Image 1 (cartoon, rainbow, N blue to C red):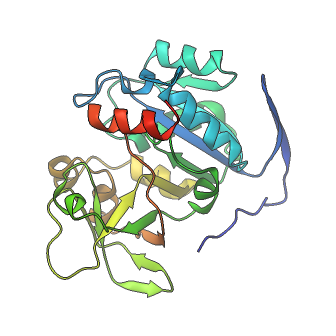
Image 2 (image 1 turned 45 degrees about the vertical axis):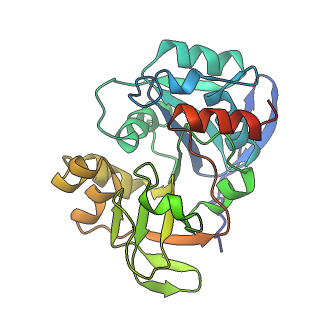
Length: 255
């Protein structure tokens, strides 16, 4: 249920302290990491078995071997934690309204020559995400909601739309509201793949009313008539949004 990135005729080698060289197609993985969080203060730096959460995410994104991995942050402390772990971080403004706006600023900084064509946005609060799922996430992902509690959990983003192919939906709506009706209901997973022109178009538009109401950046794209397709997968990585999620993550990661 995934499409692999083609190299578009160019292969580079990326070297980072502490990590082996990897082939880099015309693609990049960007991880937005905003330090401020009302539900879980200091979320990117919370300790998960002796390692900051953002470093867990960085390592898993690097293991996916899609391309260079860069953390886009507004926090010097987050940047320092990533660099200490051998990664690369780029400082961005603190007033971005969405993660996609943040990664675009970082993209322009690390690739001013516009050589990168494919941009993968991996959310910085997914410390249990599997590298294989990151590789599969060249399409936005969703999984069937099987836990009844997730249907009414506002931290679980639901996606709906008609099926347009095997295991593939065309997204028509994203919401935090309760999932109602017969279903199946789908849990949206926070991984996005953009062609660069689409990302440029997205960040050039102001936040829509629906985006501001739901606090979901995907709605800006849908409201502007942009198409989002979603691939259905079998598992959901843990998103760390609350202190309870943090305790669960620590258990899953062996603490």
